[in-house]
Length: 113
Length: 114
Image (cartoon, rainbow over all chains, first blue to last red; front, top):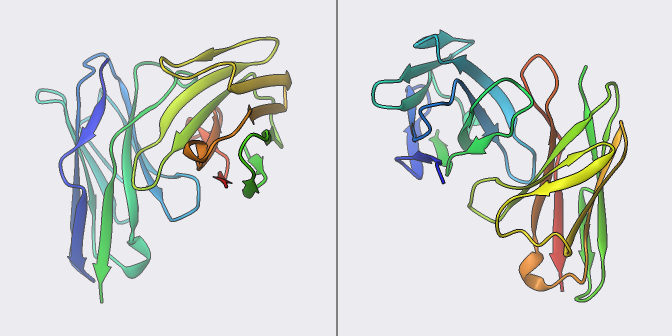
């Protein structure tokens, strides 16, 4: 079946630097994408989402970029902080809310002081 | 709004016993609940989708007789791991499609089978 995958399993970044986490998806029918942050022993925490009719969306210190041509999604975190250390997942939804999410493999971000 | 309460947060059980995990929607009615399993250092894998008033839909490879799902009401969905074995040790998470951000997740249950 189709799946969502990530390029980098671990990302080590210096505090204050920007982080970029990448994700490749294979379902061309997906029209809604979400980035989640997960800390150890906790459920996923929503970061930002984007619909397929957009190619960029910004939040507080985070930006999601969507390239439908190459089916690529990225999450940029500006001025990475120690509290950003976690595992980040992208997830895709082939339709409206209510459809099941397919999660990518995850990237662990380690912020060095 | 849109809070899903998941209990217990962790449980240890002996091999061969059964364990029930509950997810309750506190401030909305959840007609659908997704159940995920997450092994250490891995992603969330969807196990099944429960629907209030009907049978759950299981993903390929998930044993429906081992992972019993019941959606008894519009606010409660349960996952029972029957005859648990050490390989069932995992982090189980529920999620309801609701809320301004599309989905609301429970806080997860860490199951350890000894």
